[in-house]
Image 1 (cartoon, rainbow, N blue to C red):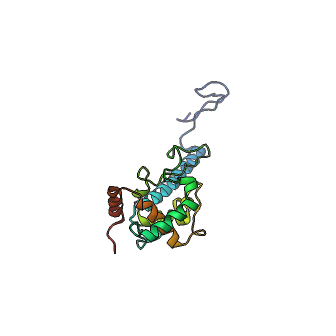
Image 2 (cartoon, rainbow, N blue to C red; image 1 turned 30 degrees about the vertical axis):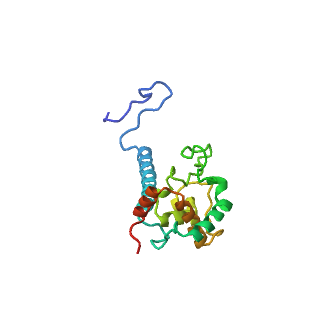
Image 3 (cartoon, one colour; image 1 turned 45 degrees about the horizontal axis):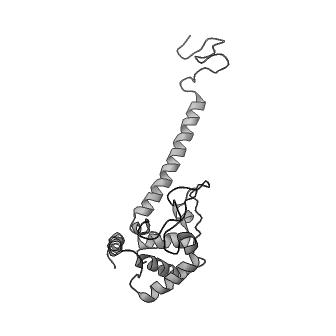
Length: 187
């Protein structure tokens, strides 16, 4: 008998009715390993793409997107649009939905706050514009699901910039300065 060969009637080390341990080189084990490797590689690629998008100084909208939180006319327009289009989920005071970091049973996250307590200011103008225009599902990709639609077919680019300008205008001065640093120098 060669190493790895089992005698006739061998029932394995786990008792009657159970199969013997897999032999080295067993094709089903090799196929499982390949599947696990392929699935892991796919997940890694999606995660790296998502991280790279959020880490880059500008999303697909380009570095030319700049908010105007100091322009009273733009902020006034943005507030009106926000109240009509966004406040039902993100709150009239930009407070977001309760427990916004905890997924619903559906697996989707509640609407985050856009005030200083949230993470909106952690992202560049261009990234915020891109998420608002195309929606989180399109931007993040993979199997990510969100209740937020893209507003590209609802609002013009200038209206999206106005809404985001209104949001930024509500942040304290130190957060606005930090957000300006995240955006980098104006060109």
